[in-house]
Image 1 (cartoon, rainbow, N blue to C red):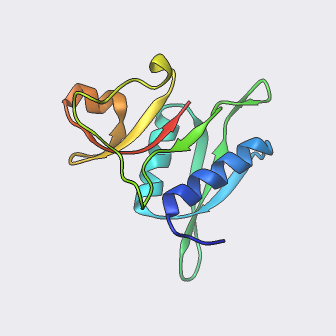
Image 2: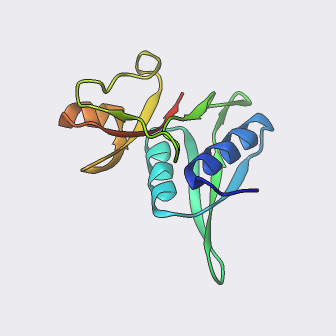
Image 3: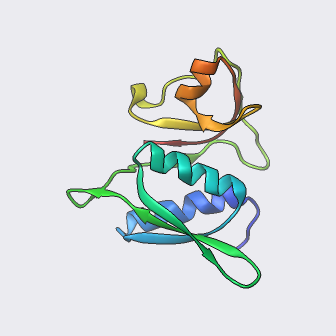
Length: 131
């Protein structure tokens, strides 16, 4: 498996685990992926996550969330890629699925949801959308 973009790799691993109805998925760790998981947990999209420490590198064990045997995350989609960065200005930050989903943005104030970016009046690079 080629790791061109770790964020896209993480999103694909999440989608595959959800599609196969796995209870958990283990992904490579990075500060950005850890922050994305904190947001997903705070927004109620995942049950929990834990850091698995190994000798030379760390991984994140994500416990997926299901309601009535259906995944809470119906779609997680990368927006920016390493070859095509997508930025939203402060007035371009829009709701995802009329507020039922979230966009995760990397801003000058850190990684946050579209809702928080609108409240702060800032834009940034759109990492992914989740609904």
